[in-house]
Length: 199
Image 1 (cartoon, rainbow, N blue to C red):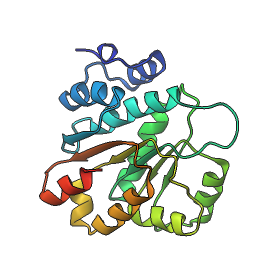
Image 2: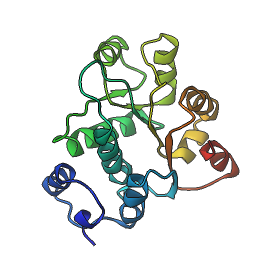
Image 3: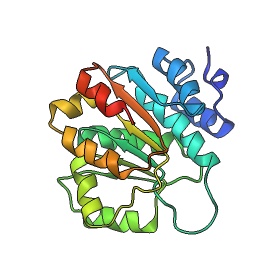
Image 4: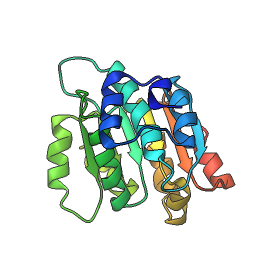
């Protein structure tokens, strides 16, 4: 199987080829078509299995298809992740895979000055990659509006639970539209993870 059998459009395939990948991993083969079809998914995936591309590529394609020209861009894609390191890596992947699309993204996490993040968000971005605590800081300061999110990704959900983010995640999910696509990636599936994956 190759990436062009998964239903991805030319701009994404070009970016994938330029990164040096030719054969999709098992999680990519299963997740990409399911996400493109608009379904919610609960995927078991360890770090290093190619899961970032499994949600980033179809998210970019779906958001690009629903982009409206003109005006300030609302946040329509949200990727939640447990650590700033992972947020930065995913942010790089979004930029790399989306380089031939007119979509913008921003990475927000704690431990750094919030002002540059606020300035970027004010300009309008399509996709936000964030750690839960800093995301809620922005929501409380009214510098981030989640009311138009179309796709939400919870990456490494088991680590987020281990790090005590369950209450933050529930708060964030409550701020999102009821009608949305939810993608949850986790190495393990406890009853708590299954409960947060339900809309």
